[in-house]
Image (cartoon, rainbow, N blue to C red; front, side, top):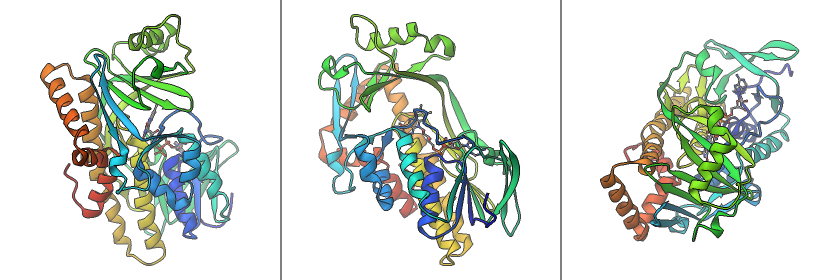
Length: 402
Ligand SMILES: Cc1cc2nc3c(=O)[nH]c(=O)nc-3n(C[C@H](O)[C@H](O)[C@H](O)COP(=O)(O)OP(=O)(O)OC[C@H]3O[C@@H](n4cnc5c(N)ncnc54)[C@H](O)[C@@H]3O)c2cc1C
């Protein structure tokens, strides 16, 4: 490990930690990223890149590469099993973004691009198999205690960003609680190469199916359809992940002869949680360490990347002497209300609209979405919210109410 003291320490080489690290590297500020895993994680997780995030990533010149490795999704649909459908086209926000579409691409392809870019800077380092186990701080700086297979070490820096995910060790170390709740049900995700568009008329790449018995979500990524379905609290993981359970669920979406080919399967807990604070002294939380939400809407990773840009831009100005350190309070003031009042509200509403058993609520949501989809101005306003452009505008204006 280098003996030069890095200015910025970052726990976690996920999308959030690596976006922040690239901003510091670009500004000529020395940065060290500590990653517990032996290499960049390649587990299947987020796959939706919102227009607002693609606009941000243009700063690194990597949006084009990311897009070329993914799929451009210019439309999204809300549907039900009885044939009701509305479609929204991101062309309605072409005046508001350089990317009037979502990109469906695995999150690990972004982290690879970010890490490759970062490692071209001599003043940036990523330390793998290196877990941040404790944090101490004073007025002068912050120290991270690192555990790696062959040594334990303490490294000092000026500031620390805890971008170490939902179970953040950094968050625990600085005594910040994660408020909110965990849903009783979990979400199952299964991927199949089955050609759903050949049996579901006019299906587009991002389609949410409302249903009071069993809603589902179909998303096309890298030649596979990802199917997301809720799993009741009293069904255990082994049951839910069994061939039998997945086949039955897929057959309920479309009854076909023979089994579906399943390429991946996973099940996970779903939370609506926001950290009580985003900062303690010289330590900040960003991304999943600061907030967790259900994935209906594709806002988790995107919101985390927006955190990283907001925080790192503020820190660069402070490190370069352009802003007083008191400006760092703006990070929590700008980003925490977005997580609490914007992302939470939208993702909870998305879930509710898909699952509600109340016939009146089902009817009024379908009517509302039909109206929005058929009115250019309402569609634009809706897509600005969905694509998180509205949240960034609200953050700049300091108004957060939806
Ligand atoms: C199945 C699934 C589907 C999802 N789909 C979407 C989606 O469609 N759209 C969307 O926007 N979001 C989605 N999300 C959420 C998204 O994956 C997360 O919001 C995103 O990964 C958060 O990035 P992060 O960098 O904050 O944390 P992470 O990606 O979790 O990265 C944290 C990193 O820190 C490392 N680490 C952990 N502890 C330590 C430690 N003590 N020391 C050092 N390193 C440590 C971890 O190994 C990891 O590499 C999904 C999540 C899941 C689980």
